[in-house]
Image 1 (cartoon, one colour):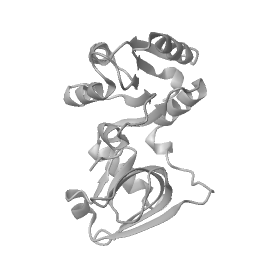
Image 2 (spheres, one colour; image 1 turned 90 degrees about the vertical axis):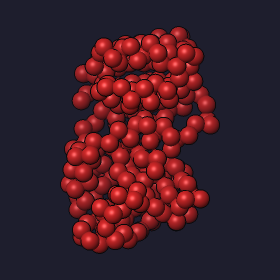
Image 3 (cartoon, helix red, strand yellow; image 1 turned 30 degrees about the horizontal axis):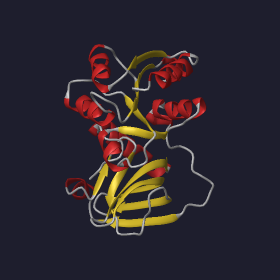
Length: 237
């Protein structure tokens, strides 16, 4: 879907910022809805088909995280979700687990906003096609006995935009990695480039957003994501 075809809901209690975002998006041809808090946004989501939700996190009456939880609990077709926040102490693990695709820091430019929207509206068939030519921070190579067992035990879990996995390597948030997973029983592998979104060193787990999938694994990964239709962007478990 192109940006100009999208129906966008912007939610922010800063009314001046709400007007600025609406004007930015309107110039791109989007149909724009606005709401000053999550409660008002929920009413719109229950009555209108929204393609992208752009929401502040900290708001009175209903905050952004509660809004997304309500979307997941109710019979609402989930939009693509972007969070915009001026606060740094946000659990990326939690918000990506709820389905949020990107966290944008305030202040941000119109170009930053439109680029984030373009990424989240891209069809899965054209995502993750181009490998980076820049060196990665780390190579992460792991062997697992079985894909189905790994999925059942959450040793490996797929989201719409990446995966979580058992990993004792010294990963750090924000690192870009070459990720290689091999599932012996099924004879499948996952060869990807990704960005580490969260690390739980106590449990030996990490969440990685895909930036590139190799042709050898692309078909089965996309097929699995389509079949399972996870609400999370990158799983939190």
